[in-house]
Length: 87
Image (cartoon, rainbow, N blue to C red; front, side, top):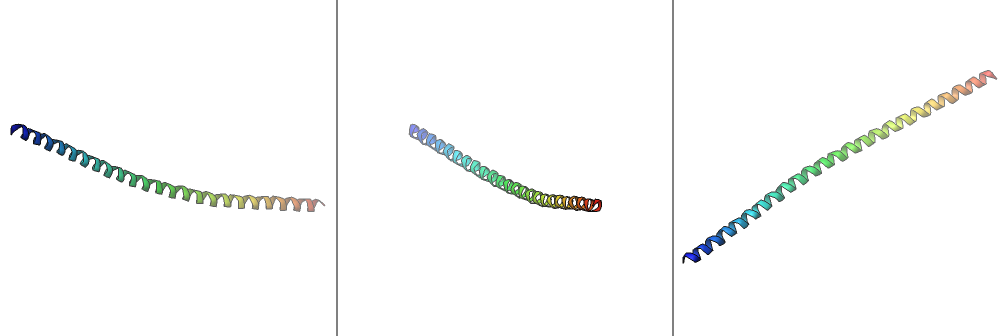
């Protein structure tokens, strides 16, 4: 009888350890899911920042190109005016 009770006690403790391990694994998975969600949010924010910088950079490049074109037009025009004046 005592041996049988010890066997059941061992089995009970073994089952409790197994349940504890399953609970720990579930907690780890929950933590991993939370970290993955936070990482996803951070990546999404980074993508938004990169896209915003890209759009701002495109606008700046377009402005620079327009200014360069205007400067070149002015130089060509002034050079033509000077040459016409010399003639």
